[in-house]
Length: 193
Image (cartoon, rainbow, N blue to C red; front, side, top):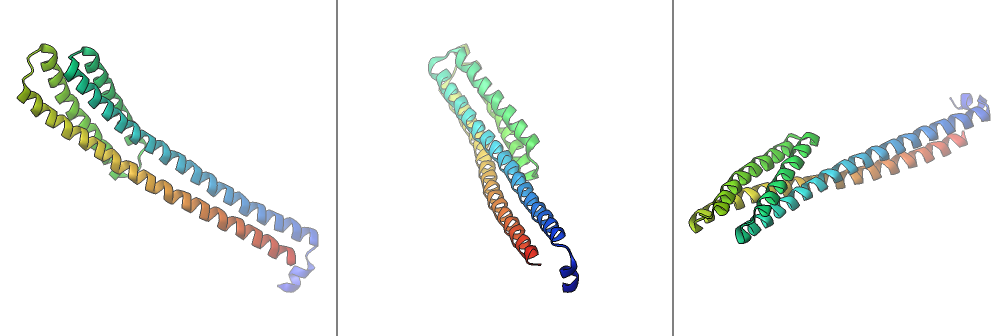
């Protein structure tokens, strides 16, 4: 084998070495790009989870304003925030691939529907002017429970996405370094023969 390597022209060795090095660098770039795409996807999903939580909190704020001020603007703002939560959760569910994450988004959608139903009851009572403190307290407890359930599901999903994103970053860096070092090593090794 060594004799065969010695009989090959130097130009052929250089061309073969360059092809090998460029192929390995190409693989390193591909792996790095794939890692970046995965990181961007997880980051987007994390952003959606944060937006859901923000909209839940906005709905709660508008709900409190409705209770205090009794204006229909706050009812409408609450319903808009609820609709946005539902839209974001449905969108995230479609983009998730793991069944556990899809179930979390189902939980958010279900909790949002529960919250909306109770909020509509509360808004009707307040805007009609016949809201009793005991009725409002009962409805508020149900709304708080539904909002917390949705928020907790988002928190779990957010932590999951952040952990997967961190693992993807580490994996992409490791693979990129390995392939780059392998390319340099094999290129240098081929240059000696």
